[in-house]
Every structure is written in C-alpha cells, then in structure tokens.
Image 1: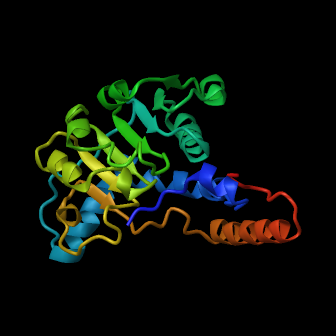
Image 2: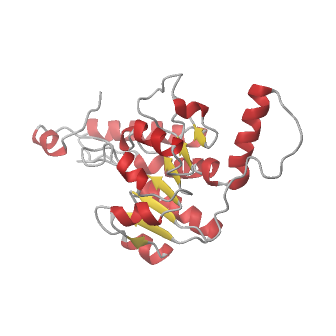
Length: 245
C-alpha cells in the first residue's frame, strides 16, 4: 500500500515531518557504480554463471560484455541532493555530458556540472544511462512504464535507486525481454520485497540489490543521529535541523 503525505494537511495540525535525504546521498550515489561500470557489470554475469552453474569452460571473448561510458550521456530523473551527488561523481569520473528532468531547473548543477535541463520525452530519447532519484508521488508513480521504455534507446541502461513505484515492473520486464532497453540496475522494486519467481531475477543484464543504498556504518549512524537531534529539537519546541514543514 502506498501512502503519500499531504504536507498542507499536516501543517494545519502542526505536525512536523523530519527529512533525512541528505544523510545518505553519497551512499546511494556510490551504489550506482555496480550497474553502470562495465567491468563490474560484466563481473556480475561471470560470478552468477560460476556460482549457480559451476562452469568454467572455454573463454569466449565476445561473451558477457558490458558497455563503455565514454561518449555516452547520463540522464537523471530528479536532480535533488542525491541526484546531484550522482551527477557530480559521474562528471568527475567519466567526464560525460549530463541531462536531467526536474520540476524546476537546478542552477547549481547547471553552473558547476554543465548539466542541461530537458523535458521528459527528451530525457527518455537521449539518455544512454537513465538514473532515477525522484520522490514517489502521484505524479511520478509508474511514470516509467511500457510506453516510456519504448522511447528509450535499445542500448540504454535504466537505474532506479529511489522508489520502486516510480517504474512499472511489468513494463520494465517487457522492455528488457523485447530488447527495448539493454539492461537495468535496481535497488528498489515493485512490489518490495520481490516475488522469488520474478523474471527480473533471472535476467543476465539486470543487477538487483535489496534496497541497501544507505547500507554503510557511516550513513546509518548519521541517519540515527539526525533523527535523535530532530526529536530533541522538536520536544524542546525548537526548529528541527531538517524538516519538510
């Protein structure tokens, strides 16, 4: 069941919602190296084959090939704190052009990273790697559906480390099965947890993690510390360090 917070309604009752987004920005951004790095993505295929099939046969130089990022375009859906961190790391590591789709322009990203704001259709059509960092809301729920995937490049990689509800799982399965996109990297799924028989789990070009984008000691302790600081501030009648309302 999906629950959306009505901020305006909550403010009428003086309820305060704390916000922890910035704490694990770096952790989630670092997670993305798994599906987009050619060497590690290829290694995933090889390890999977050896682990479950216990095979070590003749080396095929054309098997289990990943993709280079040189000359490719990174597309970001939701260029907030986490999206910005992803863009910053990608620009520093690969020097690739970055386009993004947001409700509003991100002046800091455009100035520091030379990102380009585009409409949703352009994001789909031009992205070689499309990474999702948007909140789940009525406007973003299921926005990456079968029709959206059909507009992407057949060589594109779709990444979602935000919320599983942002993409339509059946649409993603169809896109991968029919070769409408090349691969996917997911830290979130819909539903979550996944069904053990979900076809995505058997696809060679899909890397799935169990929603562990913030799974580092540093991030988890920082999240706990911030929650406590917010609670203490609220109980003392003070403004919380990070709040939505």
